[in-house]
Amino acid sequence: MGENFKGYEQQLDFISGVTFNETDIPNLVSFSFTSGFYKKFEDRLGEAFKLINIRVKDLYSGKMLTVSAYFSYGIFNAYVVDENISNYEFDPNTIIFSDVKKVLRGDKVRFEILSLLTKKEVQHINSSDIYSTFINGTEYFHIRELEDGDFIGITRSNEVYKITHDPFEIVSIKRGELIKYLEV
Image (cartoon, rainbow, N blue to C red; front, top):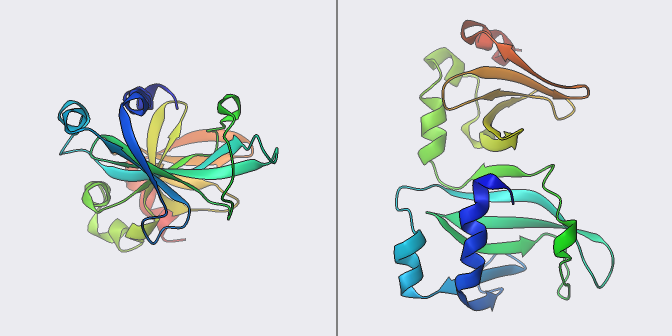
């Protein structure tokens, strides 16, 4: 899953149990760990989030499946195969992370991002649209969708960017000019 998630990958070795479909989320596969595991990995100040749009090949059907992975407070909790399929086996050599988005679960980070904005800017933001995405190793928070997947993003250090995918560009926006993009 890349450098930012190495600690989560290590956790897979500590899984003591797996449960299936025990919540209202269809196709949820959740993990349990021993109590000693939590002392080592839990981060009570950490974020609760999910990664969406992970793509991985199913060895049975040969089709690419879309997977979401759930994390909370430093722990990799569960995953969901988004397709309505009950029998699959992942091909670990075909995992694609290029379109992955980090969706925050809970309000802690949303409030942090909203606190970076002026009152006037916040009036033009739908807080439920704020999510994190990693591009070239940098975390950007989506605050405004433009068109065709292009968006305005902000970093935790309050730097604002227009990010386009065709052609791929990350263009800095002067902090005082953000409102022009939000009022459109």
